[in-house]
Image (cartoon, rainbow, N blue to C red; front, side):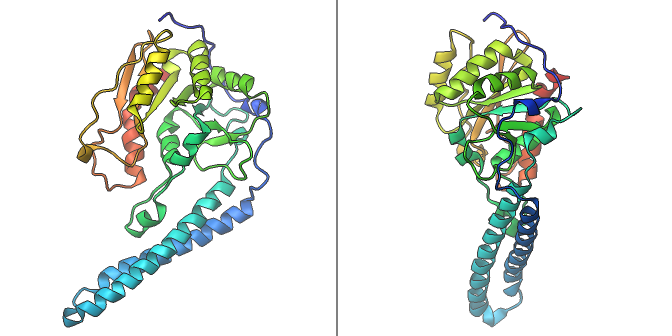
Length: 309
């Protein structure tokens, strides 16, 4: 395809593109209280689970009774951890900084994360409670993505209209009816534009605008793993504008990083040659915490970051 016209990215000043600001339900005091309470419950629940493990050691003939006690403690610890995880996550939502705060004054140009609001129900998921009980730190998938993208800058996203609290991950900005012009402004000024592909017309409109206004080195497409047919349909629809590659065969189930809802990422060379990063071929055991996944994705995206330097 011919190289589309695009504007250079800038710095800061993104607050002027926002509309309604942060949700009125956010409270820093409530957030700190919820996170403190959640942390305490997670600690108590985790200690209960680990205590249950020690209960059977050296019990000999009392093994049956010990196993019954262990089951009770495990269930109780799991419930306590689950409650603590929910409270902790809700506290994080109260303390989530708005996009205007992380892009103010001389802050670096941000990463703009675009997606269908429907995908939030997938990327907000977390296995926080059970993971804390076995000693792993877990974030939501959106948190993992924003941490992996952090070398390129703070990650911002358009907030869903009407939500009482922002999801944890990308810093939200809320817009009024003129959202399309404001998204275009954000695209042209962001350091990197990340678009999660989907089947909605809104995602297609964002894709067309990105092709027209964003340089190839500044565009990253996330390919969901839920439906390869949907990607193929998107690829065929995009063919008059840009040539996207067919997906390689997926790895064997035992080698797949099933926790992630993104199959891979497409980035582009300066001449718009596409390159596919397969995120399902994870060189790590599946039972690992979020920090391991963040580090894996961050390393996989190093070619993207190198083009931004």
